[in-house]
Image (cartoon, rainbow, N blue to C red; front, side, top):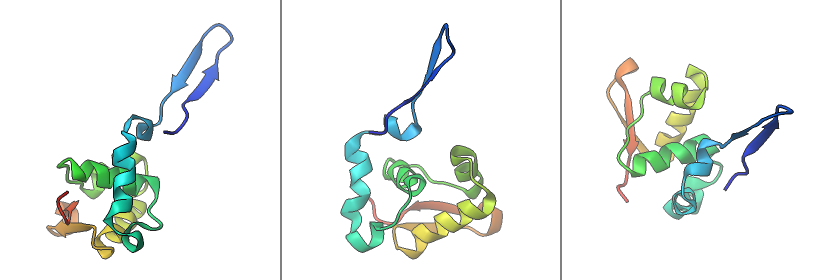
Length: 105
């Protein structure tokens, strides 16, 4: 689990929990069980997206961008990387492409 960020405002403080901190450790470890070669080198966003797909979610480029705060090119590259590894399949064309888990858990 990732440690939260604490920010002091002298008379108060704010604690920020990364999204990944809310994901159970078992789900974060699950991508490693997909095969060492396929899971090697995945970034945290890709792992989180895979975990969401494990629970039935599909992603579009726009949803990925909005959720993770990345550019369209970064989202496209990361999602296509998951497809090229055989972890995810894509359906549709152009702006209607959806990505879903290739092998159901």
